[in-house]
Length: 290
Image 1 (cartoon, helix red, strand yellow):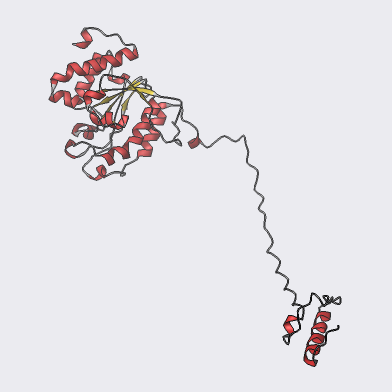
Image 2 (cartoon, rainbow, N blue to C red):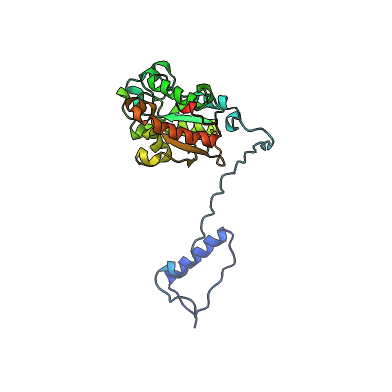
């Protein structure tokens, strides 16, 4: 049965057809009566929807043609490993600069005490921190404790010039107090880089502060002494001196300043040094132990 529309609906449909023809649309299709919705007085329910407006074209894509990299171009100098140890130590000292990273820089220090000795040493000594004499001269172990350390090195059959000497912290703590944890943690990365550059066969930690910081343990000296540890300096992977395949050994003995206060422990310290000498293959004589 054909559907009938009232006059208003027919006029609305005729207007809609004219609208589509003006748009260039001439073929219109009518759904079968069984599928068509029931007629209502609302013309919008029977009239086809208006076509959606055409989207605006996207802005043109600008492609920047960059020159292809030269795969054989050498890496920048700062990215290449520094093979000369003396130069690498100078680079680390330059990175340290006029350090203000921890509170020690504003607690009365006169200068940074970096390190001294053979940049290719097989033996390295690491102490706690500079004292008054070291702060004055800018070199580690130059006071009374330094003179005793020189005697210890001589007893081993070596010279001060044969070894490398540094400290956990590079600024003098006020009144020679023990360096605090923040100070040690801030300064230790530079020491680790120094060790990685020198590449000693063995490092001797002088005193509890050096031993605990380098081994990452909190134990008494009596338990830390008397053995040789495997030791790998924790160097940042991006540092030029980084070498994940290299490791050293570490031994622990008393700090020379402690031996000055308690000379009875010198015999124990000599036992520790003999352990190091055996590891290095140095001859041990009665004279060297006197």
